[in-house]
Length: 270
Image (tube, rainbow, N blue to C red):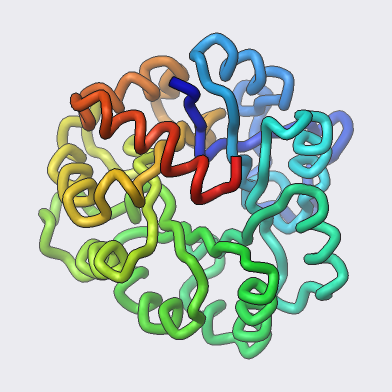
């Protein structure tokens, strides 16, 4: 089994200092270099990783991630954070460097960023590049965002199971909207349970949400992400324990291989 981590971050503030206006600058204990990530992948039998440029620390500065992709020999690909008015030439350079999409962070930027006319133009450029849009959201943000995102007519991948409020049960507007995206043929990351669980590992209260996502999206449109190096978590997990959650969520080995290997290879071009 050749596994793929479909959501992780890299930090190298010695070479690439954090943005001056970053709302959160990860302390050393929360940082993780490309070399450390490579060692973790090797130790856990994973072949590739999809890097996501983090809002924390770097914001719209993608240089650290792109340097890691260049040095990886094809092992990494990336999802960039860009301003809505980014130049087309900059996007083209990113595409040539191994970037396959952009991340829209509704948690950090709010849903109103989708109503910016420049965002509509950005989505047109994403379509022209045949890129994807990865969406970070929480609670009911997706209910407001889905109509706009569907009009954009781009492939969507939702981060961290949509970060629902687990205390409200499965029937809540944001999670209903996420399931709608599953029925529309988009994808979801089975990642970041520690971002929305009220329990410690193994995050038992997220299990009904995971099951609903797997049932609706099917393993053909679910991918696994570790969210390493686990920024802003009260009880930081270790990589192997997060990877082991797949055994609980997908006891069937064939389905587990789809989510960990086949589906991300197809979606992200590994």
